[in-house]
Amino acid sequence: MSERGGGCGAVKPVRDHGGVAKEEVTEAAPAAEADPSEPRPEDQRPAAADGDDARARRLKRLRLQSVQNMVISTALITLGTLAVYFLTPNGETEQQVRSVEYEVASATAARAAPYPLVVPEGLAGDWRATSVRYEPQGEYGATWRLGFLDPDERYAALAQSDGEPADFVPSVTQNAAETDRTERVGDQEWTVWEGPKYDALVLTEPEVTTVVMGTAPLGQLAKLAGTLEVRETEPTTEG
Image 1 (cartoon, rainbow, N blue to C red):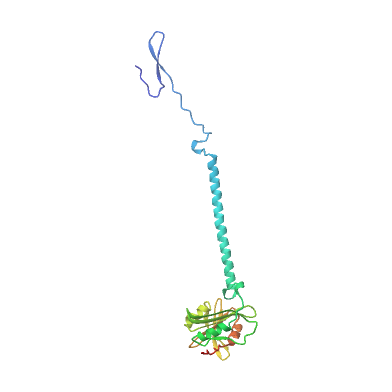
Image 2: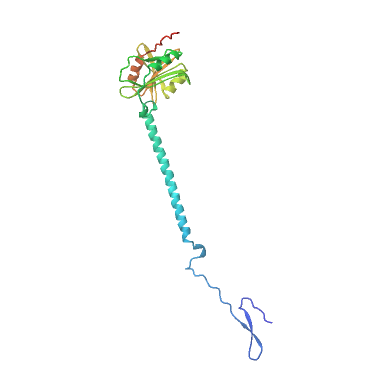
């Protein structure tokens, strides 16, 4: 019998010419070394995979650009809307500013109001009324409002309420604040209020608070206040 040595090649029995068996040792071929110039299997990526990655990156960039464009567009629209709001009287757009008649509305409101309701009398014709509204049970009580544009297209408005003046005046003037100044109009002293949007003349009486306010200068507001008179109501007839 023959033995196998550690690390040697395979042992193969052979016979010589005399008939005696001999052992022939064959050396095992050494393992082939990897060529460092050849790419490793893990480094070999299909070309299709690289193409998929490139497409994914392009899609991601497109999505980011779309989001950025949407944010910029939204910001521009918002800024434009705010500009129109602050530059147009009473927050109305140019298309919404139109002349209105207030004779019938004021007569109806005067009959319903729990206080002497006033309207301009003898106001120059180049002032035009743009809004009229009466709320019998508004947030600040019974509220009467009448808006105008002066000859220079500046906003001026009348507002009356029997609600609490400390709440009503800041609300209707959009956060104007009372000053220590007064303006004499006719035989009455009106208190001057100043604010970031509207200035105002305020007359506080036991039954009602009357406010004349707007973006028009104080002189124009005083002119409007000077034309205010109690709206007479026609007696109702029973028949």
